[in-house]
Amino acid sequence: MATEIEHGRHAERGGVRSGSDGEHLMQRHLGTIERADRFYDEQVIDQLNPRMREFIARQEMFFLASADRRGECDSTFRAGPPGFVRVLDDRTLIYPEYRGNGVMASMGNIAENPQVGILMVDFTRDRIGLHVNGRARILLDEEVRAHHPEIPPDPAPGRRARLWVEVSVQEAYIHCAKHIPHLQKVPPQQRAARDWGTDDYRRKGGDFFGAAEQRRSSESARRADTVPTSEGY
Image (tube, rainbow, N blue to C red; front, side):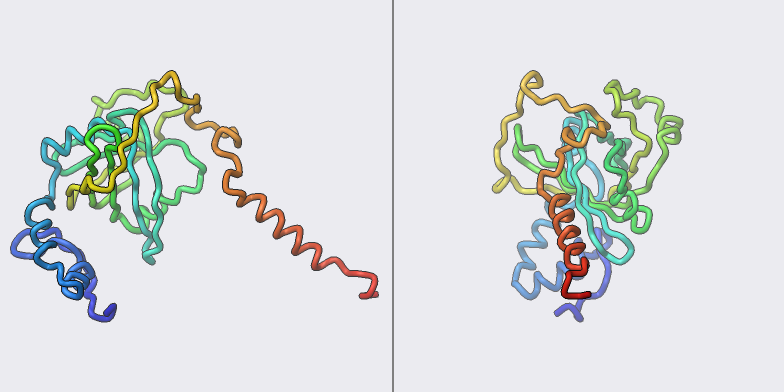
């Protein structure tokens, strides 16, 4: 099956179907072409309409998918106050890159391959999601503020962005509500305080999954295996 796929993705317009060639192949294989076409025709657009723009303006988090030039993928989580993702116009949005672990996985991918996928999910009010796919470019904070002086300085200590990501929208469409859990937002006074940009190991989560401990154990075992015993003399 994979050999039948021709590379490329279409955003529909001018008689070309939305979706990728791989999607179309699987739709033919599983008999879902009619259902997929109905979704493409009704829900997939190449701009942010007023309802989408209002939805984005009140989101406090999103998930970001990116890949390097070889197609090796990374997914990550971004969060900020309502409005931290800003819609510049109906085909452009921008968001800040706050201080993280220094790995720059997403930024590195975008530097090689500008295609990104964004998923915003409202878990607390409407229980609905919005996909935004497009081409990203990395901008310095000074560049963004020079061109968009209306963006206010961030009031939170440690949360100043050094970089921004501007996304030119190619596709925007709904993520259906049926499997989105209904979550309740914790009041601000009940939330554990977490300083933005902290380097405190424990406050960042420490070794929650035990990866560092596992690596130390593996290294200790490797060293023990290389220590000569009395039988070796």
